[in-house]
Amino acid sequence: MISIEERFPRPSVMGVVNVTPDSFSDAGIHLDPDVAAAAARRMVEDGAAIVDVGGESTRPGSQGVAAEEELRRVQPVLDRLGGEIPLSIDTSKAVVARAALDCGAILVNDITALRGDPELACVVADSGAYLCLMHMQGEPRTMQAEPRYEDVAAEVAAFLEERLAFAVSQGIPEDRICLDPGIGFGKTVAHNLELVRRLDVLRALGRPVLVGFSRKSSLRKLTGSDDLLAASVAAAVAAFERGATILRVHDVKPHVDALSVAAAVA
Ligand code: HH2
View 1 (cartoon, rainbow, N blue to C red):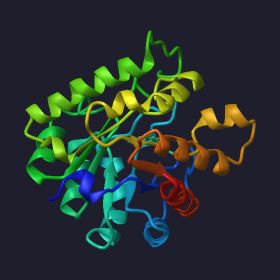
View 2 (cartoon, rainbow, N blue to C red):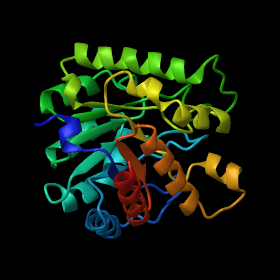
View 3 (cartoon, helix red, strand yellow):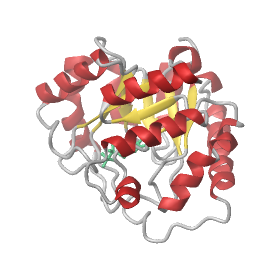
View 4 (tube, rainbow, N blue to C red):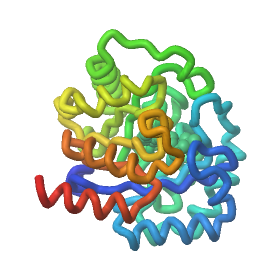
């Protein structure tokens, strides 16, 4: 497989399909696998380079689900789409990742950065899949209680550098890996903004950076609005301009259009 930077040139859009009853922003709407599959196909028609399918909500306060339940949610969607469109699996569980890769998924998006399941690194290494390593302080159940950093950009970069080295030590080629600051995962609004402002600190690690600011609660806090579309697009463009390569978004078409213009200007 070609390197992740060749496969996903900057900027590339990752569409989000959450097959969950309790997700942060699109809870319940994709529980019917036919509806989820149709939404994913539409995202690719609208210009998404890949669609990230997830069966576990990681929103602040969420408890996590068993692997069987996560698989029960995502498998029917993967069965409908595997091989047809580029798919990413949003999971920290090896059995879920393996099932998705068997169905043709090409990227494993692990919000625990290979800390959640000791078997996951091996599954990724054996398959040759791409991998996203994300920073999170704490765990979803408690992460927003009291996030603290001395220097958020430096600490997130140090964490990702260590996780990148770990992934490589497990046999995952460095050129398959992208890094993600984990917007909203154990961070205040100020932390999230500083991470985007100082994205060059993450870029300096030499890997493509993925940013997921779409519909996150910081945007609601900043705007006071419940309609987060324009705020999400602005955050994605700001992240792109500071060097982000892949933007993880729920509303694909407006992001693709905005990023096309931002890229044309750049
Ligand atoms: N954010 C969410 C889930 N997965 N993966 C990466 N790599 N980066 C992110 O920022 C990220 C992620 C949370 O957002 P969402 O999918 O909308 O909600 P939920 O986790 O509740 O399903």
